Length: 291
Image 1: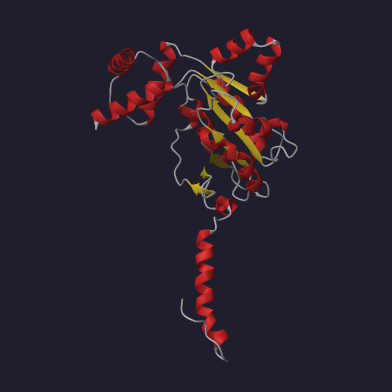
Image 2 (image 1 turned 135 degrees about the horizontal axis):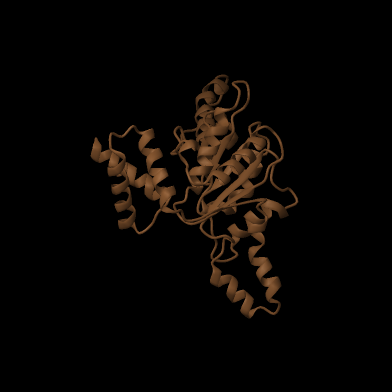
């Protein structure tokens, strides 16, 4: 390292060096995640180095195209609209069969609520947090607490194999911690499991615990902290075909109704399932073939 300058010009000579040091420290320090809340409507939380990555275009479908879940759609939309307007609302758990539109509904509702916001009203932000990052949830909430915007925290495909640090962090945030969830944050999650834990884990506790009832209550206490439970179940053939028709009409596909029905049923048979996901995948394939 060269010797530091001395003499009358020492102060002026140190300015470039101090400037470089300050710039290096700024690059090393993680930015405040709340800074990015004005740059987009959706973000992904990356706990290392601790920032919100903006998502310019959310992968979602219009709310009107989500068929077969009318009741769930109406309840979640009303709950989200109340929250965006500044009124009390419940954390929501969307559980049930795979491919039935749980995560699609969350993203579609977020988009629909923002469409109804007046130009002078702040838009609702959506932040996705990964299941493996739930242990950092208290840190994220502390950063979001002073934000002016209302925020939906979203965790897709949430489940637990044991009561780990992520389980305890989420449990504390939803209802048990002394700081609690900020008023400007709501938590939505989707899961294939109603109680977020495998059935055999709950059964094992029931058979081996000294007090079986208390053991089971402890295992399902996390899911009970979601004020809103919305169940999603398998669909019948008529609902599946209605989904396919809605997607085809939205894309203006040039195909006759009889051929559309026949190919859609064949697609579902080869997949061994009928769901919103299967209907969308069929339309993706059909769109490509017709193009």
